[in-house]
Length: 374
Ligand code: UD1
Ligand code: UDP
Image 1 (cartoon, protein in one colour):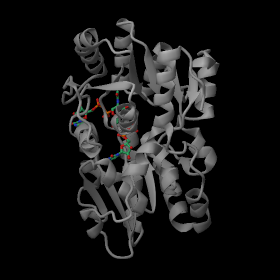
Image 2 (image 1 turned 30 degrees about the vertical axis):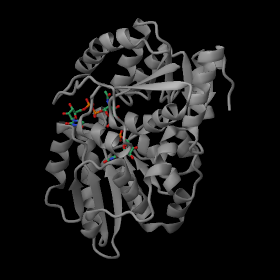
Image 3 (image 1 turned 90 degrees about the horizontal axis):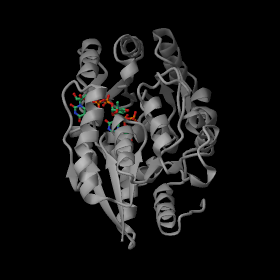
């Protein structure tokens, strides 16, 4: 039996690794070994519960104001014993968090091959997003198998001279997950607090490089637009990072129409996203999901590693300046033609069967030493 270890630690990795874990478990030639680092606690547990995933190991590394060095060193030290004892045939990591990069490095130190799910995303700016761009480049330097979601991410890997025979276009597993989370009969209590006939924007913002003034500038724009637009609400499930919590409450507390709520599980978040008027976010994963939900997204960043969504027309890169954010919001709220163009673009991130391809490729590679693209 092939022993496939998945290692992940934060909410987005868990959501996008869940379909892969289910697929490994369903494969008669494979045994899944599930390791969580616990870089996130509550936000990770929400995903584990929704997808009914029971980790074999939990490093429980999260601290209140954790630094990048703390996350990195705790993951590497914590994985040493597990990798020594388990010696899996392959380690799979996802995306670009510090868990991802440190887990890939640990596997390399133990001479265990690494598969990178969601490989090849690039902004070509190592400080945006920070530290994620460096994390994914380092993970791709270490990896043996690359699961690129799109042709563009494959091209990025080839530009860096990763061997084409190990690079596979699979689609993004975010779309696989979405197939199981969005439900027609969805309801959440927060919807009852929004007056009949009001439109609402779903907001998330958490990136390290946006914490501080950029976040304040964006929130000032949102506050002003809400106060000046009758019938408009904002729902903001606030990330549990103390830095984010502090700024969100400083600017939004007491503003009528802005609803600050706890982070939602994936079913709740994606259910609300499907009912929103549009989405504002600096999240990576949300940029992938919105096109499938036919929702325009104002991206609160200066660069994106997901240009496919910009080219398709769903995503608009607005940055974090107050004036630019206000202008983009007002345009979407008042120009039905612009709105329609963004809401009806095609989803460029796959057909919802990425996990099947990834697991098939892992099996072929481990058994035969080669694998073909789908
Ligand atoms: C991390 C990832 C980022 C990803 C994001 C997804 C890194 C460096 N960053 O950023 O790429 O986009 O996750 O959300 O890997 N906290 C809790 N409970 C939780 C989760 C977080 O209390 O369930 C608090 C803790 O105080 C923690 C802080 O949030 O110290 C920051 O968490 P951390 O994982 O360091 O950074 P994120 O901004 O979540
Ligand atoms: N998400 C969620 N609850 C929330 C906000 C987001 O389940 O309250 C989901 C969202 O649907 C997406 C993922 O979390 O699948 C994105 O994670 P996040 O924004 O934390 O990280 P990023 O994608 O930016 O790394």
